[in-house]
Amino acid sequence: MISAFAGYHPTINFLYFTLIFLCSVFFMHPISLTISLVCAFSYSVILRGKSAVRFNLLYLLPMMIMAALINPAFNHEGATILTYLGNGNPLTLESITYGIATAVMLASVVCWFSCYNVIMTSDKFIYIFGRVIPVLSLVLSMAIRFVPKFKAQIKVVSNAQKCVGRDVSNGSILQRAKNGIKILSIMITWALEDAIETADSMKTRGYGLPGRTAFSIYHFDKRDKKAILIIGGTGLYVLLGAFFGGMYFRYFPSMKSVPITPFSISVFVAYLIFSILPIVIEIWEDRKWKQLQSKI
Image: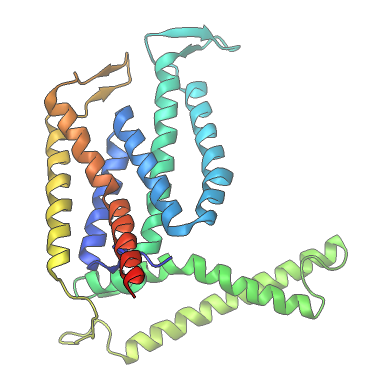
């Protein structure tokens, strides 16, 4: 799917994901965690379709269950004792709740990161940091795109080896192991050669030299100004609200939350607007596109 939010200026994309990552990690109130997970899951499905649903169910759900079970098994803090484990350690309501909250936080961060990989391409990252930290931005960009590129290349190599009967599915167990090592050796050689070719290519283009100019297709227009006002306004309000205790929630030694006041409600509403903004943009742009198509 072609993302509408990806069409905004790279600064807008990077600012949004930086803020949403920080909020998802540090805001541990159950309401903020729920908002973050629901919005992240929904946006990943909008961007990646069925593959996102498959990934979330096959990988994220077991990870959440594991994280939720591991915490109370090792963390025995909390004032509300439910029962005692076989080794004599208490099982507390606070440790269970904190384990669930941690699992939700990890899942939301992973979902947001999957959305980040779709929206923030390597050229956008280099556009933002290429002039400030050219070497580091190139290294980070290469690292981010290495995994999908490696997965695509290993499919090509595996199919080529399969055509000559040297795939990991051919022969005895020992022969399969040899074929797997052969494919791994090919991939390591390819990765090293690709890194050297990329470095030589960037060097010949004068990447990182002072005074070097670069072509860019990105322009900051009125739409970007409106977006940065909304993102900056809601993001700043949420951060200030959290600083003044609008999202306070304590898990240990006993659970305690911020009182429900107009101020705390406004902070959660601002966080919901901030988190759901890309989804609204995608739906709004898709609706506008369908209206234009209907007029043709």
